[in-house]
Length: 357
Image (cartoon, rainbow, N blue to C red; front, side):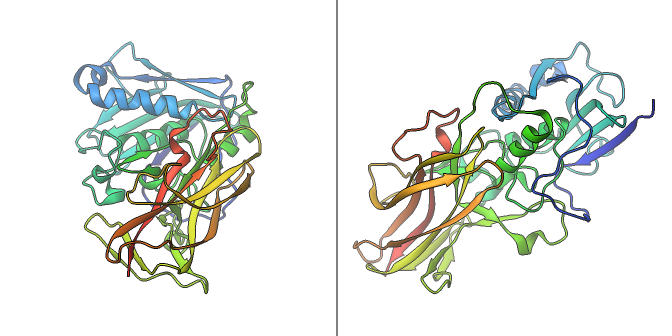
């Protein structure tokens, strides 16, 4: 039986020849559960890293496919490629890391994935929490471990790099729903669709809709295999981006006047099993934590399929307020709480700050 060893570096660019709605390996696992053995030294010496890996495991298992993921403690401290065990370890070996912060090695034959080994950078000062200002996405010092760990775990399930939709299989650190000071990451809709297509749906229906203030940066992606992402924008009715500045954390602050009609852009996702028709609301707030207690500017029903993210624009009127004061415009999907979801945290996000002129 012929086997192939393939290394998949995290967050390193290389040319591609085509782009599909999703990118999945043709080989599949012969079982519905992928067991990945974590080096016991990780739990013993890096307990916060280990806890983050467990969080990543739970989020990966939130996907709507029949394929599940199981992290267990390894029976030894030796982590090697092609040793008959799928393993995860932190290392400073640049070869195992493929010169990146993370790398997944796949051993397969023509039909099945036989082994998958994940290596993450031991020396990198990962962000281990969900505080937005600790993430490089918001001017912080480092990439969140949970995003990269999920990216690599999804490689072990057969997901490949993605470049034609905002996706955790692209640049993973800014694929988040952010409300107030905290971020929330999940398996991207496009990846979920690929996992379901290849492995079949989960027997239990999964429901999870979300909103983000990030979108695909098609121009920035270019020929990279990784989708690049940019902040969702605010526009005037002619389609021109509103004037803005960036603060110290790379946050846009837009300028508008009371009574202006503006377009608010957002990315909506349905990571569940079936199409959802659910309420969408756009709100005006005095802070970046958007809730249904804020001023409702717009409401309608949104119909969300289960294949690719939906970049959506809503037109609203800027309310009256104190000139020179910064307000926030944000969105809530399933604003009436009608959908019983596996993840309710990602339903609300602020889109951007607006300073009244």
